[in-house]
Structures are given as C-alpha cells and as structure tokens.
View (cartoon, rainbow, N blue to C red):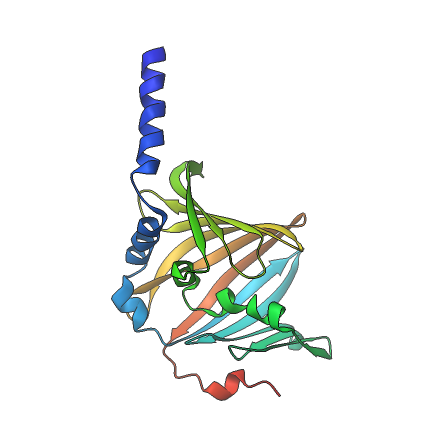
Length: 228
C-alpha cells in the first residue's frame, strides 16, 4: 500500500510539471474555440441577470477591441451603476454621482475590458507560475498563479486537465478577496465558447450571475464608450 501511495503521489507531481503555464492557456484557448476564431471577435455584448442577497438586477456589458468597455447595472429600470472605459480613462456613475478614475484605477479595468482577458497574461508585465495541480468539484485542474495585473495583488486560476476550460479564479486585491466559479460554457458566434453562469463568493456574499444573451460582432459604435 505504501508503495502504491508513493507511485500515485509521484505521478500527480510530475504531470503538473510536464506542462508550462502558457501551454495551459493555449489549451484553454483551443477549448473555447481556438485563436483563429477568437481573433474574429471584434466586439461583445452581453445581458445578464444577477442575484445578490435575494435581490435581482440586470447587467449590460459591452466590449470592443482593443480595450473599450462599458457596464450598466439596473434594477426594475432604475440605473444603479455605470462604468465607461474608453481604453485610457474611466468614469464611474452611481446613484446620480459620477467621478473620473485616476490613471491607476483606470488601468485596473484593462483586463475586464478585454473580450478574452487571458490574452493579457502573455504580455511582458505579467508573470505566470504553475502552482501544481488541485481538484475542483472532483475535477483535476492545473493551477496557475498570475502576477502583475493592475489592481490585483495575487490571482490563481484553475484549468481543467481534461477539458482545458477555466473553472475557478481566486483573486486577492486591496479591497479583499473573491472566488469566481465558471460554469455552463456555450458556443456563440464564430465557434467561440463563453461561460454563461458565474458564481462569485466575496465578503460573505454569493453573487450569482447568469448570461441570458450574448451577441458577437454586432458592430458596436465607438460612441458607446465615449466619456462626457
């Protein structure tokens, strides 16, 4: 029995070392449709419903390459919050009050503004480390540590060994920590998959987000991201 346990431990340790972080990411890109199809996506429009502490809200997100982003959250037709990022500067509006974010805070929106945020991990400013392997919901996962993303202290991401899909993200930032679970990947547009059910656990709360509509390449105008 001891010999068997040693063999199993050795196998688990070595399989995690036989692949690099970038190879894990490339496997993920292939799992969601491949780089060629990803490159065909020029803009992204999504409508989702979010449940927070029993309250239901609607979120409309728009993204356009290279890094423009907007997000509107409303409840029963009343706008609760809005973020507009033109790629350089961001403006946040909440309950009738608006403010421009400083350069550092605006830069922190960069990863969120990308249609495929994981492509940012290949930049020179980002450091990737394979932290080994762990199980998530009984599924073996490669665990990648990501350092250097603006606004985030540390981040770990879990990618399925079998499917290649991202299943979990652990984030530590100045305002606290959060876990995000990625579920129910579905095909959209030019052969590309997106997770349509996200569960975020933070500050003792569970935020359940379900995407009800995703449109790709709907020719979103640049004016949608204009900051007044």
